[in-house]
Image 1 (cartoon, one colour):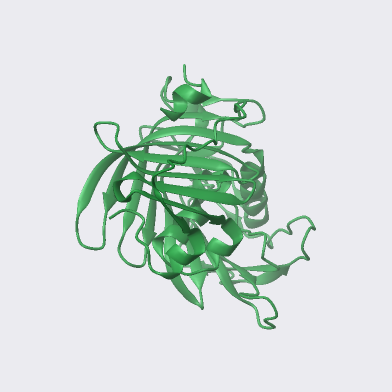
Image 2: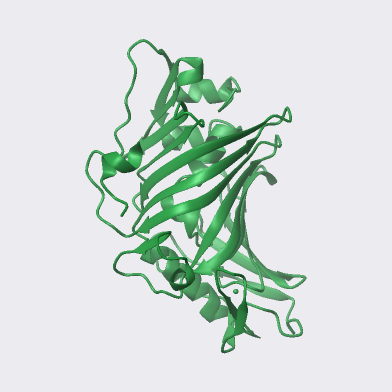
Length: 320
């Protein structure tokens, strides 16, 4: 088990709507600090693990976006175990167990296992190099994550894009390729579109990702991944709960985290093909030291080796 190897385990509520329907765009050049959106007062509430809410002091949009940026940056490492519900495009459903270890630098490892502990998929990324082991298909795929993310819009690039620790658990409305973000009201939600050039040499900006902030949370509840102006996948963050409201034994906090930071009880990753992967948290450890070998993935010598980009372009399925 991954956790044995690691040696670790012992909400804004809109008040009567907003007066201004569209937020002016916010821009910055690469490497500069994130700008904030113009201020519009909104009323917020906090939620306990049991779902009870209590009214908190009013905040504004600039403070909300700044808070989301700051919270995401405060996350350094994640170790998690979760129950997994997988639904395929053919209507098949599977119940699995999963484990995850990741850090803000982009290194991660995720394992999905059957009820008897048989590994269905093992994915690791170290310093931008990805290895995917599919034991049920006797396959090992390896390649550069940057190339994999632009090789196609199948479920595998979606999972690779989602598995960065911050994107998977506490995202912010920004990407490394972005040059601008725009916000608008959509019913009682704030929707932020992150803009950038979709390909090298492109002149026009397009939407790379779109983020929705629900009225009952100070966190992003939906992240949509875009390609050619269309959504090919999304990550839903379900049941945000402040860290200090999690049941004892389920959550362990390391340094640098605010107890009021909201963490999702479950995460649902959905692909346009109708494949969905829902992760329901059972144990979480945040901002702890990670052993150097925690991302090491065993690569069987007898497995068929494929280039990751070639597998993606051929439409290789993540799980048969």
